[in-house]
Length: 117
Image (tube, rainbow, N blue to C red; front, side):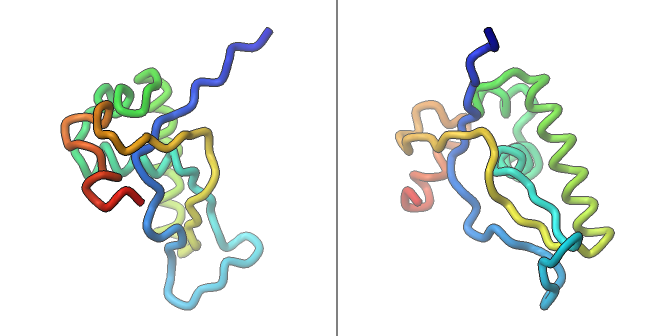
């Protein structure tokens, strides 16, 4: 029997979910999909300054899981920037936090700070 799925906790969805060259269509082969949980690792580690361990605690997963998600997310960002591809953020294995701020790390819950989006 497979192990039960462990959902990754995410504070909020991105305000914009499409990035890329101005006026560039997201047609066949000209886009990359980043999952919401990959976006959350970029937000926590690169923007908020969390360590991978702190990020893992925040997202309720193992540090090695965060490391893998983070590596994949960075590769997708690089491919979008270097090759001029549109970056879409959607999907993934995540659940939004409840906005209470209890389990949202040292910076507090982003949903609470930004109006509970």
